[in-house]
Length: 454
Image (cartoon, rainbow, N blue to C red; front, side):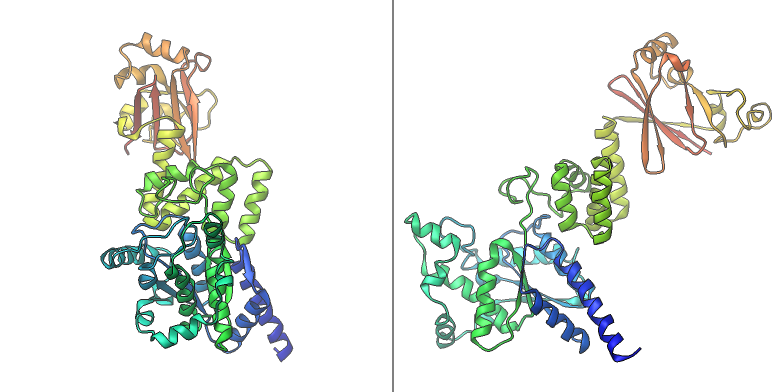
């Protein structure tokens, strides 16, 4: 391969990186700089330094926090190194972003506890081997006064007041403490100290990220590229996900709870969650959007998202159980805790089988009875309901069936099918050949799981 072909191939890979990196991004300052940094790093086998700062203001991470973590993971997939900055020093000041009044600083004890919990939860997403965790107190607590004066001389009061929160408070005659001006400068110094290539933050952090970029320019350092990500709305679909608002989905929520919460989001919000939280490729996301436009039931897409999220934080077995729990409790209106399990051996089961006229293999009724038939059969429902004590008599079974109060559920692949028994079906139910259990719901409260034991 000649030099021109190698360069073309490299540039194509960089463009693929940028497409993946930009997914869900609100603003990128500046894309051409990002391209040059990625190209230089690839040509010289140098991973980029990707910085993100987290103030340990709360011990629990919710899915809103993971928007940044997922983006950091994307960079790691391309070989770059994440600098996960725990703002233990800046947390003692308090980020004024989004606050209408001066924020109370955290105690050192709270900061240390929250930092530990935050780290443990973050590694459910980030690759530990490509993550460098740093506390900004390691360098900020050692800044000399003359150094800080030199840093602060690069920003004017007028520029500080361009920050929306400060401007609003000034117009409302609300107090602004001097130390709140210091916060953006210290966060900016983090970037200067680390010589970060890229800094990621929520779109509400844009001002603070720009301060870091401008400080780097002032000290003749290669300025960082800025990437801002949207704030994820919570379960109410309106407000930013927040524990204080009670609209959060926590990464430590129990599997069934997490699954149910994700299923409760709106169909419109689901696509935003996919874009910002899911690991599916851009091409697959595009296909999903087209499938939905072509009539795919949004519930199916939402289930896939819920399974992915639960599997990410709890593992595959828990995600499968959460899916089954949701389908049984909410879609079938069955509470798994109220289910009575009935086990039937081959002889017991075949008492309720009715020969299907003309069915392939029907002659087997006379000579051979496998535990699970290899061909479709019919289950005689009245006798089965009576024998498992779901009803007091055959006449009650017939009455409930006529009323449509008896439902049977079979799972074929990943799809659960619901059928009502009716008088028209002669009070029998045709079942497929590839089943090992089914569920009967009798009336509103009685639920039976029928298991076939080989």
